[in-house]
Length: 217
Image (tube, rainbow, N blue to C red):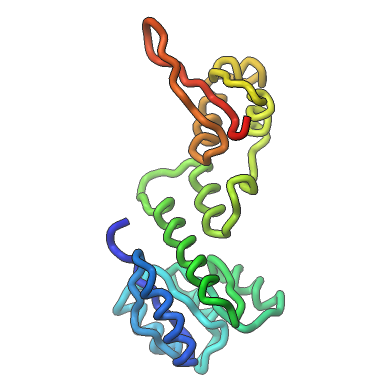
C-alpha cells in the first residue's frame, strides 16, 4: 500500500480530537484529515474527503455517533467513554471494526491503527480471497495471535497427522485419511499463517517435492 489511508477524527472535544489527529499523523501509512466536532460537519467531510477510516465518538452534540457509523459506508472505530455492554454491542452491530474505551494510552490507539493498516494490506486486493486470508486479516485486526486463530476440523486433523515429523502432502493425506488435494489446500493455508514450515526436496528427476514441518515440531 503506497497511498496513505485517510483518517477522519470525529469528536466534539477539540483537545481530544487534536490529540487523536496527532497520533494518526505520526503513522507513516496514514494521513490525518482535519478533525470535525459535529455529525453535520462529519457528513460534509465524508463527502468531500472520502476517508478510508473514521474514529468516531459515540455521543456528539447533534446526534448519535454509532448511528452515523451505521449510515456511512466507511470503515470505523468507535472511541468512547461509554463502558456499558449495550453501547458496545450496538457499536459492533452498527458495523464498527472495534471499540476503544476512553481514556486510553497513546500506544493503544497507535497499536489499533497499526493493526488496521495491516488488515487493509491483507484485504486490499480486489480479487477473490480464501477463507484463510479472511481468518488471518480478522486475527490481525483484533490483535489475536496466530495460535488463537480458529482452526477447521480438517486443519486440526492435518496437524495431528503431521505431528513432529517432516512429511509430504501425500504422506499427510494418507495418515489423515483425506485426499491429497484437500491436504494440499489446507497445508497451503497453514503455511500462509505461519503454523507450518515448508521446504523443497529435490530428487534426481521431476519436480521438487514439498515437505512440511509443524512450527516448533
